[in-house]
Length: 87
Image (cartoon, rainbow, N blue to C red):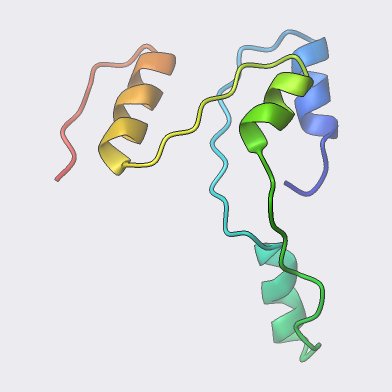
């Protein structure tokens, strides 16, 4: 996450929104852009972020899912879509 204003706005406006966070333990897009511009890889890794606790601290509901099958079923349920098979 680049900043938390989006989550705060979503909660404040009571928007029905599902957000999927894929954690790469870094500022991945910034790191990629800096690498393209030949800047040193410095200060781009992050750690010890608990996105579920962060989400809950903003007044939203957060879940942590690991296996792809669990992720798919959770998203389908959250979005009220029929379940699909993942190979």
